[in-house]
Figure 1: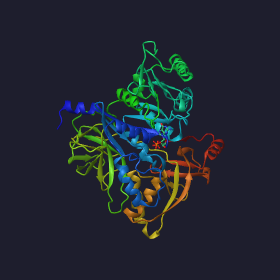
Figure 2: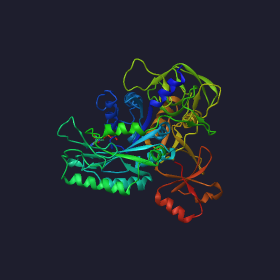
Figure 3: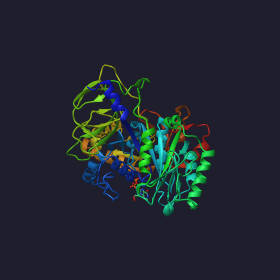
Figure 4: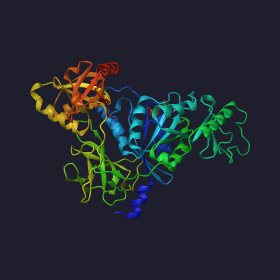
Length: 526
Ligand code: GDP
């Protein structure tokens, strides 16, 4: 058992974050740079695991093999500057799922990576909203400035307007593309050069007035003049840097750079570590705050990754540690059932191999091999006090399929499978109000494929899935319902809680409905 002081030291070192970005913005490239700074040597491309190659979606063995990598890269841990950093992966592309959203429930801060030429893209916006809802600090890295990008001021405005968060540029780019000369780093009082004449002197120091001390190789360049002008404008009209606002997620510090050429990533990491929070309290459903330094262990399951290999039907439950200290083989209580469980079969997410693995404390993630004990959102704890962490939010699916059992004689296993997988949080289930047909909803296509595969392999139930395509889900007040409102373009369904909602075919159908029934209130979830 660690002493209180040891626990405090360990927890105060932890920095746990996720990178939110749209596919191709540079998340993998930045992650690899960060791991390198942390002394974790990896072969290029190992972070992604899957590469960008097209894989046959039906070939589960193949996916499983690749997933062998992707499981361990779901959480990456390294040490830097006296801190222990946990990066939680938020998959994009075809892997995007509700788990991606839920991962954001397990971090203490987020890093938003934006492609400088593209600005805010849809996936970034969705992930951002969850961080905003949680009120966690968000740090922004505007990437790919070694290519032609949008004007920095334009990007600042876009972030502020579309995301509703104040920006504070920590630095300002000097040129872009082939003329990217560096950044004016007002936070660290220096100019960082992309191509210093002397490699050992990549920085030009600035004096109190922000003037370069000594010789300035950029003097006279148009890009330099533009950067100074931009900086001046921002200093006069922009916001003040506020540690409190950053901590509350109301202001985002913004950095410019190029992950590919490894420019700006180190400054970003060091400044991030200065302002990012250590793990703090987690609330229970009754609103009680669980202190990370409490001697009793507690945590919650935020993600369950199924093993696609039929020979190994186990899965991994990802647990965010919220308090105390995790010890291999320890006995905990599973809150939902109040039953004891021994946590002996555990994977630790170590990016590098280390002999003496420190015990996991608040902020760390442990992976428990699970044979069906856990559900998404489950709390586990030691001690006498019952701890039930706040419910994980439900996310509004966008993709829907109609689902039925292929063999009508096998309804029993079909229902059993559906109920268990839905409870586990793999997909969301709806029922057509008029026909009672089952409808599944997901935020990513892969969720359906995993569902189909697991129904077959774990419940011996072959399912038929008919794609219904993208829909907009909007909940309604049952008092305002007239079943006649339902049509093929706005299907009336019931969710698992028995609440009623419409699945609108598109924006046009939703607008049409609003005009026809102006009094009916339509609400969305996250
Ligand atoms: P992810 O999908 O967000 O993980 O993006 P990746 O890190 O895989 O990057 C997508 C593509 O953009 C790759 O071809 C990278 O080499 C490239 N890329 C990433 N960062 C930069 C950058 O700073 N500059 C340039 N020019 N390309 C970059």
